[in-house]
Length: 264
Image (cartoon, rainbow, N blue to C red; front, side, top):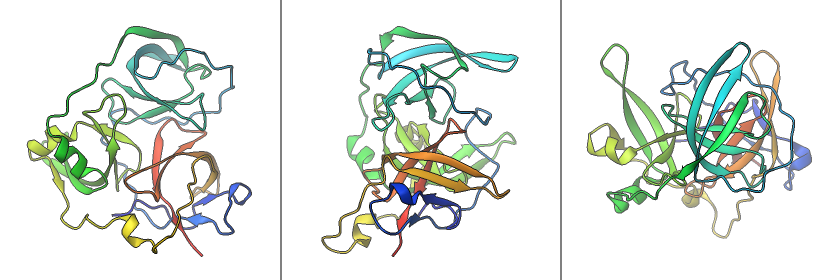
């Protein structure tokens, strides 16, 4: 299973490439359905301010989220600080399934940021062998719908989540953004099935001795259907699938998951 965008839609900007050819993606179907409970909103660029000295990774935070005349209280856990953009943090907010990428100290929509005194305690994984087995695998994940019957989502388990280590990063064909679930519980309840044909790996596809260049830190550009463009940055390479990357666009706080294939 590959999570790829249309060949003409996403490109790594040539000015930031060390190789002579772009790493171009293939096709991917979209759906308006999403297991993420938060409504998506386009966001604008924020001003970059000096970074605080305190390390807040692993901390619980709360703040008001203000957009226009609307505001709401958010509370969550800071999972990571992005090395190639230290002002950017990955956050798992309580009650939401998808991961948010925010510049917490410079985003004008984040009001009254408070770092809570309690830190997240390490969680014990009930089945470490199963946890390692499912990483990098294609899966079928069942979700309950509003109408009652369960709906199947085909996806890929990307990694154990940082900090909240009993949770897993996962993405889906229908919605290729970064989600986070307690998949061991879903597996034991029969709501997650590891696909039998998911044993092939990117490593097996490479020629002996071939070195895969990392695209982390590269600028990317995405061509939209309406002719517009979005710009962003590759912020992470998935260890279990080295051709799979996390991308953060400037106008969106979601983290997108792309499989980028280098062409000659």
